[in-house]
Image 1 (cartoon, one colour):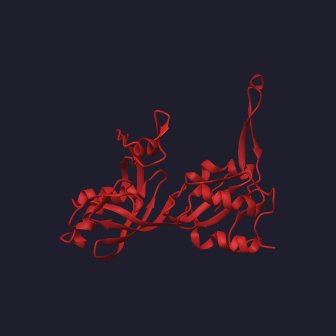
Image 2 (cartoon, rainbow, N blue to C red):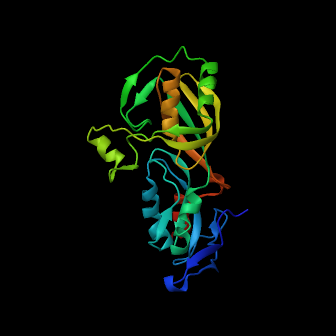
Image 3 (spheres, rainbow, N blue to C red):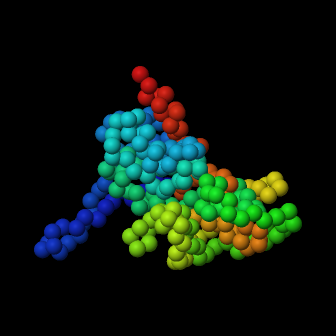
Length: 257
């Protein structure tokens, strides 16, 4: 079932005092088995973001490939993360951003026990190291259950959340730490799949707005040994999966003369 609405309410001039529904054609959803959109064509493009590239960096590389400047995305991935990024090509697609942003997300990744970093992930400096050798699999399983369902989560200081008109990461880079308001998010699934010493692999399904690196950090806090997110890959957004997505390399090859 296509989760994107095909009707849009349009308000008439105030003195008309009416609202009507107009038909809006949904742009095509482009997977790796489909042809890339032509220049000027609106589309919803599934992309497998590589490691080391920001979400906006993906957009910068897509512009010359697709021959269009109007490109957005529906859900940021940190540079160290990989996986599914829904890119919205053209004005008709970018108007659907909120609907895609609201879809649940699925991730796989690795939590590293015993190391706390300033960013809650592997990109930040390690600020504290603790011995986690005594933590059992049963301890981890019991701790992760506290994060199932609707929970309150505070965004990390190194995040794009705005407080007093400024991004938190800008304050963090100046060495500032401020109180962050906890936000309700929902974790539908938090399964531990494998353990290799202090590294614990997981699968998470969660709502919009969930910080998986905060989940890793808080899990370590509950265990009393600290932790950070060592690796992350987004495998699905709603019904869309990363297996369906184009890679940037494949698009460049397709677009090569």
